[in-house]
Length: 254
Image 1: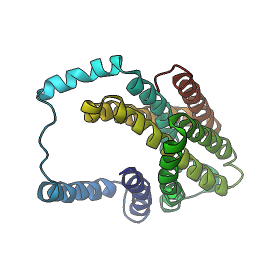
Image 2 (image 1 turned 120 degrees about the vertical axis):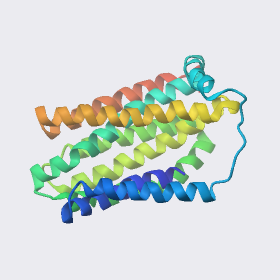
Image 3 (image 1 turned 45 degrees about the vertical axis):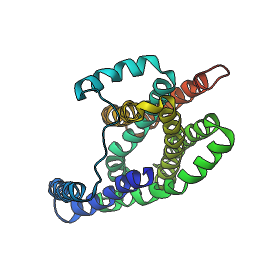
Image 4 (image 1 turned 180 degrees about the vertical axis):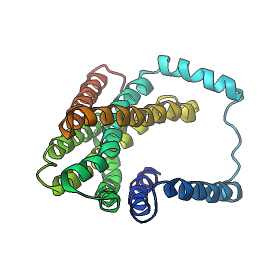
């Protein structure tokens, strides 16, 4: 599932780069709307009906999210870690096109191809899962976060060569994918009868981090250039590492 989500996310950048280069950036919205319409029809026809696992109403389920977040540190802590890592991910992809144009003169199509290097993370999901089965969540999460920090150290060399951007994008996706695999397992096992709500909290933090990262990194790029973006990425991933180590210390929630 994660491979599908992130492969689609990364290859969408390749597609949108080609559309922006040869048509107009507005056409990416037209194409996106058409794809959503096709997927919506496919969901109605193909997706099996699943009976609800709870007798609560939808409003009551939404209200229960806050209680679940407060009560369960095994949901709250991994979600916080993933928020800061999402900030790193969203910040990179929100600013890489501007950086590539300013430093290397690359247009939308060439920048979109960087998404192909990010797809390297597909190869990480299964090994990360096997490692987690043998050693537990903590080492996989820590290694993934270190990978994100390493990615931003490499990305800091982007002015020298576009190859550092490609390598940094691959490291970033690999690190992020490893942490998601491990943290998602921790979250879904916290309250077995509330897996959907647990994942709602987790994914809201993950994608919320992406949105906040895009906002902050864009402002930083305008003010301080690419070095400002990299400084934010290193700071956010370092905070994530501290939170993960606190979460997984002896006697911690995981």
